[in-house]
Length: 261
Image (cartoon, rainbow, N blue to C red):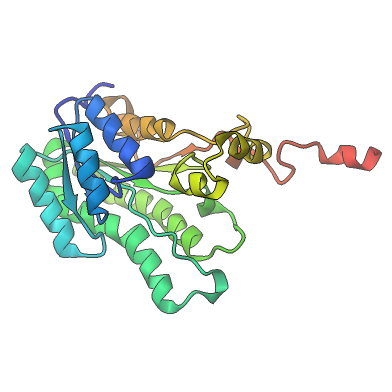
């Protein structure tokens, strides 16, 4: 994609799962990346696997000092900073039994961390007319069983993206959201016992394309939003969900046929 080669990205939550694939895809496209995560063992291993264009920096997104240090680390090692991709996330959620502390932690990790990182990166992004990609979720717009905090914090990201896009437009910085649906990742792997076929079968009624997505498909959307091909796109959301959000409560069934049986 145009406009990616020799650029530099910080990707939070990128030591494992979808974030790791995003990091690998960026490097394949000629972008140097900072793997910013609390998972040191996995992050170091991923950086070694990718090669010299990827460096690990231990980063707790709830720590402003960590976020500032990560921005400095990127500029010191690669000489510039062009993209911020906010993937770091907590799935801490006890529904209506969640405590105030858990509520605030969900907001702190899922929304505030990326917001503060974007603040600290702003001078560098302004200089290079960079881009920010926030990670939302299909759960941001619907009620999901057993969840309050995750859906709430992901919904906040959608509005945060719109507000940031306006606030940073005068700096030439574009801000968008990628919202994955059901993606084959660590969580899906654990829930299904590593059975992708079974996972696709369970997902089929809820997705027009009849399967869960691949991490690479999410990564491609991120790269597109950072590239020159998306130069007139800001304040927007790309839903990478196989059409699940376009389906109504009938899913892929014909509910009226049940009356004729």
